[in-house]
Length: 412
Image (cartoon, rainbow, N blue to C red):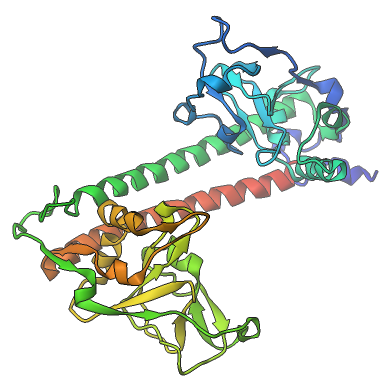
């Protein structure tokens, strides 16, 4: 093999002139625990239990991710792990996911407990699992065997490259710092989202009430209860279209996913469709509802369209609502995503394998509206929170892309 292929593109200055990386064999440098324990044993019964579903790539196990395991699941054997062990998922859908244990516990039989040996650094091993080289190997092996899993013998056949122990330590520490920054950023985002969820409960009246628990100073009037359908009318999405009508044309349509995911629709997340003058064009302030979902708690998700360019339609799996009164569109967007309204929507969900709602029933739901000034204050408040979340998510995305680049450049 060409010597250049055994040298990473990017190295620390003090190792820039070190020798090329060496071939290492997994079986000689990584220990895979095969010793299972009985979780009912008094020595282990009080330890937290995790399954492969608790494993999150690129981060360590957080204490609040521990699941309480049902008693009937405790009968099967578990792998005992200690702080610093690497827990690796060996069966889909967690195949290839891994975590660095931050506490002692028991892991399900769907995982491997990995530890380095014979001079291989544990932190370097943890980062190695995240490289494309290892990922491609694990994927190819699972496909070759026809099973969505990777076994011990297949792992032991893996050949990789590694530098001196000192450089391994440097690489492991570098990625630990980067992982800590990513984890901190994820916690920051989770904190703001949790705050938003709390406000969505407290800043809108609950069932049988006409004032919210929390409101801005200067507002004391009761909110007015109305039927949603009394202040506007509905319209349908695309109809009568075939596959050949999509993917091209001068018109656009808002996708189901766009409506489902966004309180305020992403005006750039549209797809092409043939122009049809019979279809209803979206107008600024239209409220869009999904009509079906696989679970009742996700049916009837709503989104507000805040754009007025022509020839934009709604997909056929949603319906629209157009208000005939003056409202703050941001306020309404968050009102319809608040916990109280979502509970009313869930009651309307009907189905077995897939749940649907009737737009006529949705129009009968009662909502509470304050005066327009209070609507604007609330709408702006939640808009600011969402902007903060988006800003923090962009920072997270930047860190994750930075890590991907370093993984590509710092490994052979």
